[in-house]
Image (cartoon, rainbow, N blue to C red; front, side, top):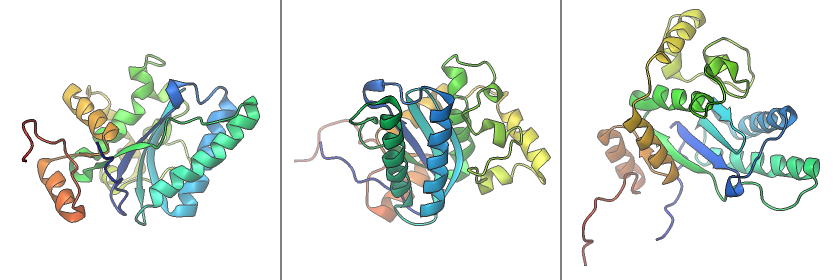
Length: 227
């Protein structure tokens, strides 16, 4: 089956997953995490990308970002991959690839699903059983979005900003969202959409994207294909 072209349009949030090759460990010590985030900041600034949320796990990363220019997110990820792999290989005296091919991604319906995706990303360490509170995991954006830790990488999305009149109210209301368990079906839909490079959102959102970009962003309906 032919691979669908990636969509990285300007102004539309994108959920990104990049996994270590064969699920191998991609971060070994704290310095690795710090270097990756530094390269991500450099790439975001160089190519005009706003990064709203992230989590770095031992063998994969999640990022939620919006680009100012078409294709900028792909350029940012290429930049991060090039410099981080060089650093990692030199640090651990290894050669070859680190990541599992190209990154996976899906378009996010900002009106309906932006905060769902952001919570999904920041709850990864909790789902993995690493911590019982997302605030205790140092390598995610939760400490910035929910607790106010200043981070130069963070760019707050307008949906997040609409949570309150000031930063204190926004952070409180954002923390309140984490009191509710994420809907299992929504989580599965987000995972499937990201792994297949589709779109995550309402049926209307998906139809609009398909009309705008002339590219399928939802799974094909089962059944015989026309001859």
